Length: 196
Image (spheres, rainbow, N blue to C red):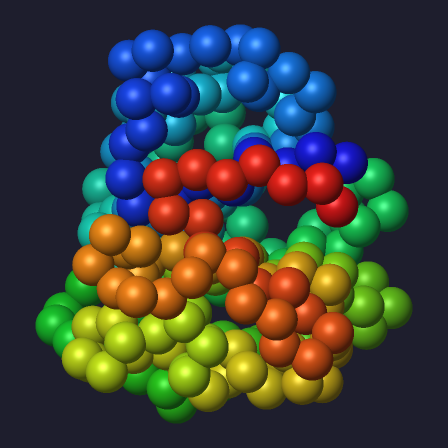
């Protein structure tokens, strides 16, 4: 299965200079947040494949007007072609906003998702978030600090992939991909295509 991962920055390759050949064979698009609705709408119209998203800390407009055609993954666990995908959007709380959480609040969100995870036979193949996990691609400043809760998910469920955004690759020295135990962690900044 070919996955197109997007996050945080509009890509000219996906918008201004769209080339369908580059994205041929993409089966699913996953957005890790902080992208405008018009951009997401354009992508779904051009690729015509299932699209899922978690909101980022700058996606306040999605509370009242979610991106058309996109399915909300935040707070959900879905089965896509036999692959279990779980989503938790938002970032560490650094000001008031609908998609910002303290560590305690994120832990509570995970706890409330336990029945949904159980219905997927306690299996998480792909974890999708906006923010990274603590010490796994995050930064030291509060807005870009990662969640310990996400690291606990990786330790317990051992997903094959952990997809996130939030930490822009152009202002950090973090690599796009890192390995943590059995999990491949991918920062979706701008766009990245990979095979599951």
